[in-house]
Length: 188
Ligand SMILES: Cc1cc2nc3c(=O)[nH]c(=O)nc-3n(C[C@H](O)[C@H](O)[C@H](O)COP(=O)(O)OP(=O)(O)OC[C@H]3O[C@@H](n4cnc5c(N)ncnc54)[C@H](O)[C@@H]3O)c2cc1C
Picture (cartoon, rainbow, N blue to C red):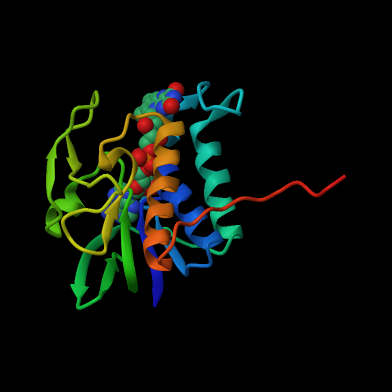
């Protein structure tokens, strides 16, 4: 049983997976190779002078897996609620999780098919997004959403930040107190 299953492994999903794993939540994240970031060249991501989208995604995914998250390269085709947990079904297998974060980028088909409320998007070139509250919760208790699919501005610094923000909100809810993840330089 995973604590958190994250559907999507672009900047939003990968960043959510990194924070979730570092918070010692058993984490799985899924990549169907449909992410748009792999086509980008980033020159506006704070702290990085220039990076290709494929490199940003691969470095981020590696950070998350090295922190303990499990990356599954498969398309999620269904999410079913069974009482307090979820069965996440991919084209190749099934996974049980207590919470789900949708981070599917431009793809709203899965959200629509599992009964998550969607609405028309307002950001350029995005059609449909998931309706979320200020924390990132959808209409289905236990399913949260982050990044482009949750209506953020379509920039990697923002989608990655939103994945972290929503993961921190979910971790805080699970833990029953606000969560913070800081490393500190050793004293000189
Ligand atoms: C050509 C181009 C140039 C760009 N240039 C810039 C730029 O210069 N600067 C900038 O800041 N931004 C740029 N962007 C935008 C940026 O890439 C996105 O706004 C942002 O990174 C999206 O992040 P995301 O994680 O929300 O979505 P994505 O990166 O699209 O990731 C979505 C993830 O969900 C997965 N997924 C979807 N459905 C499923 C499913 N059913 N099962 C499993 N996995 C699923 C995908 O495989 C992927 O891993 C550019 C985009 C494009 C297309």
